Amino acid sequence: MTQARIRTRFAPSPTGFIHLGNIRSALYPWAFARANGGDFILRIEDTDLERSSQAAVDVILEGMAWLGLDPDEGPFYQMQRMDRYKAVLAELVAAGQVYPCYMGMAELDALRERQMASKEKPRYDGTWRPEPGKVLPPVPEGVKPVLRFRNPQGGVVAWDDKVKGRIEISNDELDDLVIARPDGTPTYNFCVVVDDIDMAITHVIRGDDHVNNTPRQINIFRALGKEPPVYAHLPTVLNEQGEKMSKRNGAKPVTQYRDEGYLPDAMVNYLARLGWSHGDDEIFSRAQFLQWFSLDHLGRSAAQFDEAKLRWVNAQHLKATDDDTLAALVAVQLRGRGIEADERLPRICALFKDRCDTTVVLAHWAAAFYVDVTPHADEMAQHVTDAIKPSLALLAQKLASCAWEKAAISGAIKEVLAAGGLKMPQLAMPVRVLVMGTAQTPSLDAVLELASREKVVACLQKA
Ligand code: GLU
Image 1 (tube, rainbow, N blue to C red):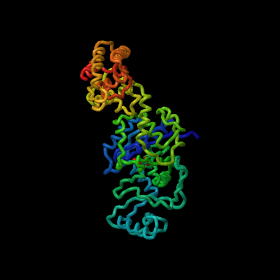
Image 2: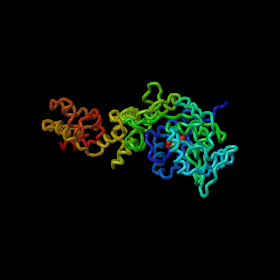
Image 3: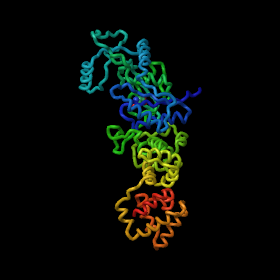
Image 4: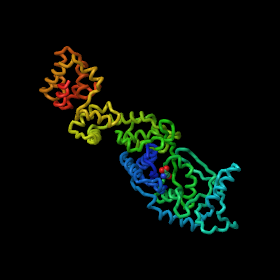
């Protein structure tokens, strides 16, 4: 038998801005589709009209585009598929798989209270479920019914979850789910199943907050004459405090990481490791990840977000990124600060990237080459002493006329050191403070070569 083409999906609800925990649920299905030459589908589950927003959709689309999690199909919007859901609902009605239920809220509440009082699990009791020979209550006047799904009775619903292993739920645990509201609009679990069928999804990879929906969804699949897909339910992502990551407790929208100077490949690397592993590998490229990814090494326990580790992963990727690519990213940030960079920028990135963990930090260094810096007052006091000022003036003089390249600059520095009987740090530290604003920089001749002669000479003369 030939294996069906692999098709996965990411099905976010645009209620609140997606954070790293959510986007990980996009990364794995994307990677699984890519790793297997399949298709990745984006579906926006926007049926909660009150809580869904276009701004949240935008963050989803922007975040995915930034991370390179490109869908092959979609975005599909559930609100635009209502007619389709209603048509499938009509099929289920015709097949006798759903029935109208007229039990009102007050009655349902009373039922729940009775069940709780006698220590039973609250569930719909099947009052309106038609059975051969059963007499249903009289239909109340003026009440619009909900439609309930005839859940199978007896037996179990079972699946081999790719993360959690075999799960079996007794059908008697599941009551008859409402699948259409009194106004005829279909409910969540039903829409998901219709979509997963229509979109020919073979693998549902999603957060384990949906594991309770799965047996219900599987029963709806079967009622529609379809076999359910393979399921992989991912454990939660915890924030640094060990709570479930959520917008309410401070999780940032994914796009904020872009603005904070993280690289998409580093994010993919970090998120991949947040719930999946390949031996001891911590740093890997996107291509390696796709080569290695399978559903067999997904972690079973909750993963905890660790910003320090994310920064470290980003630093490793930053070091490995070529200078032109970095320069393009840094140029955008500089432009945001009103600075137009020039052809020096790739070399500036090359010189500083080893000491930066985000492109924001890198842009901060780069800016010092284009605008005047304000040296730290205590570093000024410590390094730019009266005793060194004559040497700084001499250096300014020599740098004003030497060739502007590293060897000549280095030669000028050495001449000044010799003339004053100085050691390198005695001169290099104050020059760094004056030109770059801080005493901690890469080697002085390399830094000066990238700064403009005018700027360097002016800074030294000011001292
Ligand atoms: N819309 C659901 C959510 O955002 C996901 C549903 C699914 O993946 O089946 O949690």
